Length: 112
Image 1 (cartoon, rainbow, N blue to C red):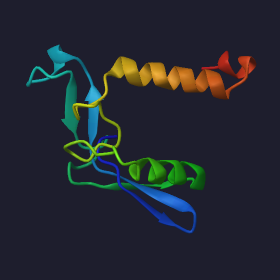
Image 2 (image 1 turned 120 degrees about the vertical axis):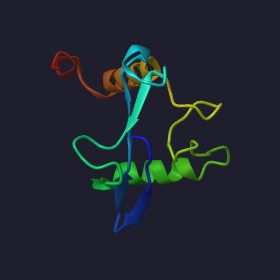
Image 3 (image 1 turned 135 degrees about the vertical axis):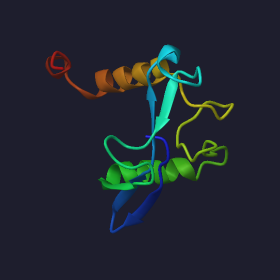
């Protein structure tokens, strides 16, 4: 997800997904960047996918956007580094695994 916009209707939110910034490695891009900026999978670059967002997540994301030090990235990214660049893939992976281990039981963690 690169651009993310949240609106809230009746508790549920809507995520409006515009682009993808896939981590592919420098050797696989024409720019030398580690990410490839592209449209959503198998869709035109201008396509916007609207996905439902459960009330709990919508509330968390809306509160996050109201934080005094929150500022979206240059292309509307919701989560960025302090210098407004995209988060490193290893950071995203570490946070995901930490959150997963705090959320699921040890039996659930054994599953993929």
